[in-house]
Length: 325
Image (cartoon, rainbow, N blue to C red; front, side, top):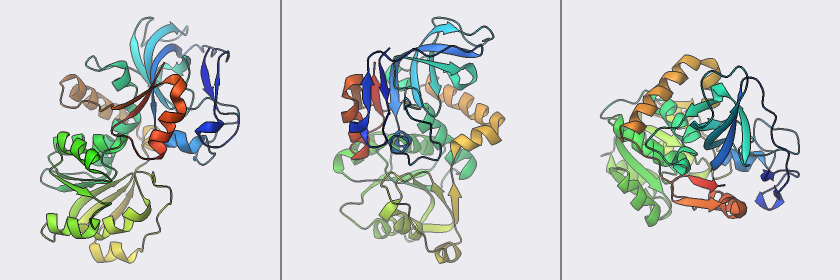
């Protein structure tokens, strides 16, 4: 089968598109998925460089999420049958034509979504829902500042923040990205390449500051965002798409009376599986009722994988980056 293989650590130019990679073996609890589309995420960029917290042995197929059609099922599979449209998630293995996945890491596709939309929902929406519901406990009327707001997780944070009753301030690096944020329902927007993030937040909140910061970017924007927090604020540590991991002066948490809150959805699924399943059920209701709809504006054929990775690395993405098989 055709598969994107990491044989040497580095950026996308080090990857190899193999034409005759061995098909996966089907375990008794696995489903074999004929992959139609796969979602690209920042952890995929880290893992091919050897910089992620989970590192498989070389060679490996990267890719944490995909959608497709069930082609075969293991002897003890009870949740799916051949022909079902599904999506799946894991640490690696999705950037290929066929993948074998444990049935408990597989979900029926929401009926309202295309394969391209479904391929990109698990890591982004699952992360944002957990972040805003469990970690921030965001309340109606509170103010949410979303950094990197036009990216894969940022767009989901805008949608879900609005549904949870928050006033959403979206911060991104271009007018084009901010226009997308407004279309998704952001109440206010900030181009942090042109104006001071801290000063603009202060102005937009009448000096009060924001209740919740959703930060998948890190780097130079982290400290100004924390300085923009209100009393009892919660700063959600989602990731570090800009590269550097920020070093925060802890006296700010004392002065602001705010909390720095880590968001590791993968660990949450292990530590609190019942809450995770409940979250997923609630998200599926939102998808199928049309209250949320994944944004896919950057879709690439499989053989253009370098362009797909670079779209993410160079932070040009608006919504989710998807590769189609």
